[in-house]
Length: 528
Image 1 (tube, helix red, strand yellow):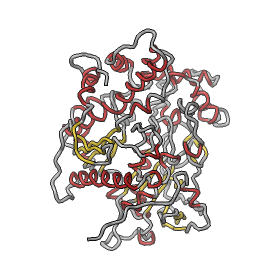
Image 2 (image 1 turned 45 degrees about the horizontal axis):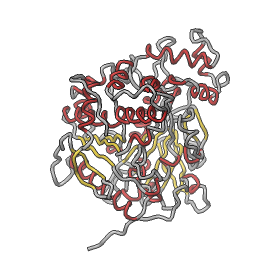
Image 3 (image 1 turned 180 degrees about the horizontal axis):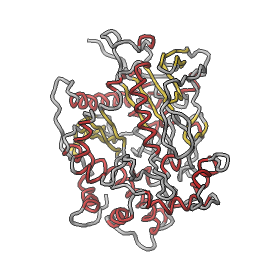
Image 4 (image 1 turned 90 degrees about the vertical axis):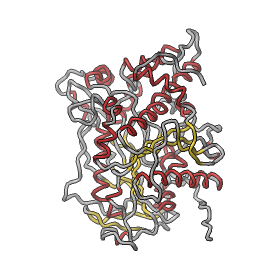
């Protein structure tokens, strides 16, 4: 019997993709697209990479994205530069946790137009054959698309969290695509008067998905296995119905006044869209100073991107049934053990009175109040540290732990196969004091060999194999029939590195919060 060696690398964790592509030893590769032939390069492990490939046109701020026209032609310059990320404010925890820009954002510069794809292709894929019909000797590869996190306020396709995607395609023989999109006010500023429909970041993402479907064959990918077969949610889901544009009036007014603009002026949108009058850096500085109003979210609107009855639609099973009709055949979702270890440091509270205003960043006022009331009230003289810890716990429950479980249940009720997991292990290189904090699972999710030792690598392979086995069964391609696990079960990557199905130990505590947001008997969420 042949035993496959454990994969390893000599590539350093801080060795950025674009830096490898800039080396004189990086071989250039070419792909023939509908918009012309483009040039990429190979990383040190041979992976073929194209960075910052446009999927949409540059356009004025607060406009719906536009697809590339048929006569568009890509530049003859090589697409090997990590050149840009969406303009965004500083994160609330940025001063407390200083990090070089290369680690936070990558090597690029901020832009108002982050309409690009970073594409990673296995080293053995012959791109000269990529537009031909798939055959047993040259099969089209599965495509896995990734959207960076960041609360819709921050993030980049590069930086420490998302750099080095070149390990994954080599290990699993898949094409991997990361899509840029607008965040913060650029992606989600909304207003009823003047009319701004918002949701631009969501629309960007959808345009990017359409670009992948229409163009990924040029990079060796199978458009039939592009984004519409399975969907994976990493530590996030929706807890409540979204806000309306009218509820954003205070936020829009504050933004304008902070820029010394009259929010009721007939030309205020024209001014906001003009970078000569409102420079991006200035816009981001103003957002940083907007206090509790500096979080921009998706909104209900006539464009149909978000339903006003989103949670009722989900809870009825309608979302699951409609996803199946649209061709989605399995949804994967999960969380990590210590989500609150990261959320606690994200927003700080001077005292207990700042907890509720912070919750209103993310939820409708009545939902924020219900969530707030579900937790034991702190003493009047509670310290800043106690208030901040309470907020971190509430947000981690409300943004991740509870909505992930509710979504899983609701999708199953709509006859959608669901694979739910939890990661309870962290790598030594993550330097998180042993806490499996929000985002630390990306090392496993992206198969970052440079961040794992031998045993951690084996654990990552076992977890990935177990999860994908369930997905393959759900797709009807496995030797065994898919069996839906109960809502109190999840696939665990345990602290000791083992992977297996186990009991969801967190559900009992979360059920009281569930009653607070979905009705039923009251009661406070009990302490751990």
